[in-house]
Length: 297
Image (cartoon, rainbow, N blue to C red; front, side, top):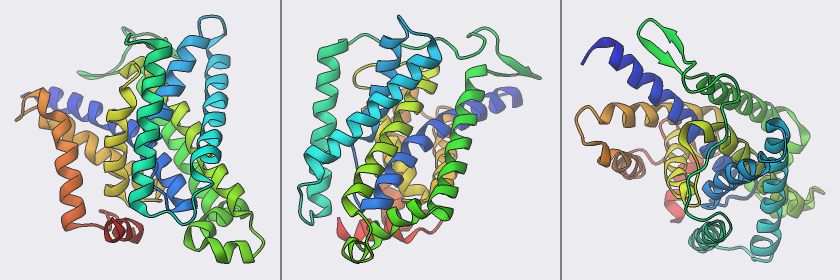
């Protein structure tokens, strides 16, 4: 293998790692406010991409992306209000079963609406052949959109949860919902907001990555697995660590095809998830929330 080819694999790994990180961030947002693991997060990514593709047929691309994100945020609110809010102190296992059921339902509904076809948005800037070249390494302009988007999302969430009153209220609800209520925090509203925010970020991710990865009715399932692996790897609820975890998984996956057949690439994520839960349950970056998840499972 040449050094240039190795660098190309690394670029691909970082790109896919950023995609996984955005999904992991969605997991972390809901967990930060509720302590819930929302396995329907991958479907929010799929839904955003599918809606944007449909809307782009008769709307300018930026407007189509905006409406796709807003509609998906509305779906996120409905999911919380209809299926989560009425539960009284649900166990982790019960929430996992419910959100997996929601994931299956949303996937089947997408199949009914859009069919099995593979779709994609056009490149936001340039096209597939206008790759940027640094020596022998070629970088698609859409990759820069993906990396820029995840960077902005991480920076926003670090400031939101660390510096704003609303972000602190959401974290207080996750730590102790009863105590948060006694302090005058609208706990139900915070939970709904977390689902809305996670759905919106997932939808934006689905739109940005669609020109690279394409989108179809079942694409959210694989993203949910990879995103959850990254969330556990980086430490649940830590947006900055999720980016690091995503890059680690993306690079490992990309380099794994050097020694393994490409068909086994997805096995890497499962193996890494199991290894982290067994040997490093707090995540690589030491977030105790992940360790607590393992204890309750």
